[in-house]
Image 1 (cartoon, rainbow, N blue to C red):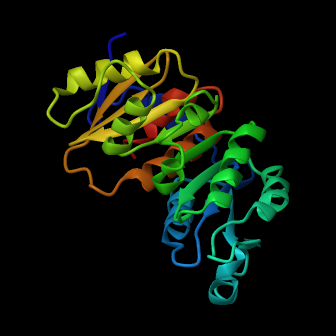
Image 2: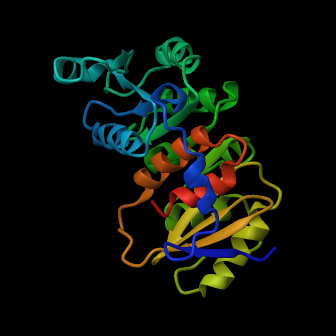
Length: 259
């Protein structure tokens, strides 16, 4: 498998721009889950980005530890049971699953904090729901020690920092390793070999290059001057693109990176 290359000047899938839904009621519904007592900026930013990308509707799920702070300001947010430390608790399951029935896709946006109950809840979301899911930031951290949970799941878009990608290969006991000094072609080749037996799509970044890989495809997207803080924006764009183009998921994810 040889990686295809694209840039803003030479997009690979520009026809998708003309297939984007124009009517709000046809542009899909995104469930955004994240936040804990000490942070919710990831959820707020994801909501903003999703709307910029043309999603029809968003619904925000937050732990109820944030209710007193946010309910007067965020009147349409849904507040779910939380632990004593302010993260999502296992009692949030039913509320999350009920709201998932409304959605066309889920974004696990981050700011979950470190909590064993939250980890089990996220794992149940991944195991029990078949919706497309994008996972990034500290939501992905829960799975760096046992990444098969996300790698073996179809309709899953894993947006990983380079260090997270390194850890995923390491804990998977893959025969090759990633390092910051390797040529970009070697990096892509390693990821292609790693992902050939996985069901998900992996997206990571090195310098100005975003690498998107699944078991059948790989695309190297070069964006000069791309920001260092990128994972949440890319994960949000990716899940919106998948909702808009359900039959062309990989192509849609790659194309959205140029927006």
